[in-house]
Length: 347
Image: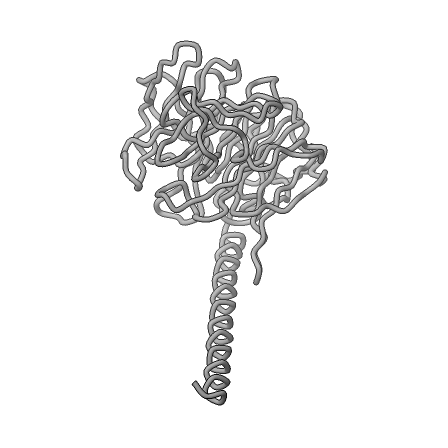
């Protein structure tokens, strides 16, 4: 190849690279603009729920914290209703969140900051909706939990892939002190033990932390490797995960610490159908509940015998409802809060 031909080909490659870069940036900008337009449309539409005035602090009485998905003012913001009146007016806190979880004194918020360059963030607020601290997340918000005392937070994000369906996703789950002290780093770096043998760190995902009542060091989570999924019991101090049950995803420990609710893939394929099951910790007995719709959520306990979870609306993109279901096999789902997502029960 002559020097002139080599220079010409080199310039052509740079031109092609520049054109592809412009196309990618334009595509990202278009996607961000469309996402922002959808958010704006939902925010400016007529309200589909009763919004109360105020919202300067969390309620003094037991309440449910959730993400408001009702169109109109407050769409996408953290909101509360009294536990005694879940169908009454909701109070929005003025803080936009994709996922929320709370205690009587703190609110954990995971959110997407949309723009030409989209970024992701975790933030903790006090009971007066004043930000305590925030930090960047490495991917799309998925799950979050606080321990009972509000001293420790867990976050799960999608680093690649947008859902737990299929095999093309990768997660990062981190447990961090609320006060800003050093965190665990990715739970994928913890030792994972299954049937007495340690599993190689390669090809594993950990997600969906739930803390044991009154024990910020002890937790349950989901672990997956080589096509298998386990419920694992974890310890922050020992940096260890131990498999205790097969096929349990996104666990949630009951208030009395005796049972774990989780979603279970009944389809057995890469296109899942997740139903809800409950595991008795002491006996190992698993009970499948009577919710036949696809529940892609980390359920919350309303009390020791009732669960809450979110389901998207088929007829309205971006909208969802919170449903209630008893933990006995005969119980049937009941609508609990309309236009809501990511429930957290605070007493």
